[in-house]
Amino acid sequence: MPAVDEVEPADVRVVGVSLDCADPDELADFYLRLLGGRVLWRRENSVGVRVPGLLLIPQRVEAYRPPVWPGASVVHLDLTAGDALDGPTERALALGARLADPQPDPRWRVLLDPAGHPFCITPFAPSPELLAD
Image 1: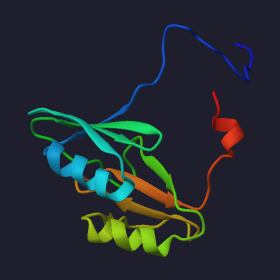
Image 2: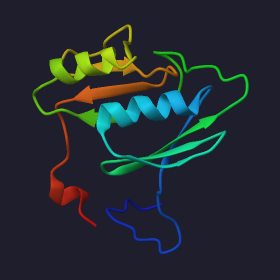
Image 3: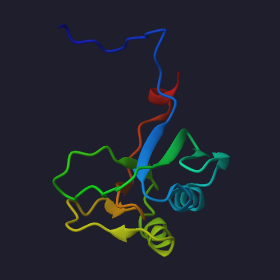
């Protein structure tokens, strides 16, 4: 298959990221307080949280087991904080996150959310032009 720089399928698009967990309310509240945004719905088994640029959907999974860091093949969120890593990291910790061990690079922080999902607070972000539709 040849390399492709851009493809525009008309019938499929990303609408959100679902995060498996034991307690959707707890995880939704964590990301809402960390990133801002608003709750779009709260149901027994899922919560829709619109955060800037993304819809997160914490969803209840029976017998949930958190991913293992490092080593498990997981999707994780990259959150940019510009050059100010310490303040956002401290706020995430105060909200219930914990530092992952090991930390693979001193230029960013890997944390685990209350359900154990890894996420990074990073100084890196693509230019707005790259993200424009």
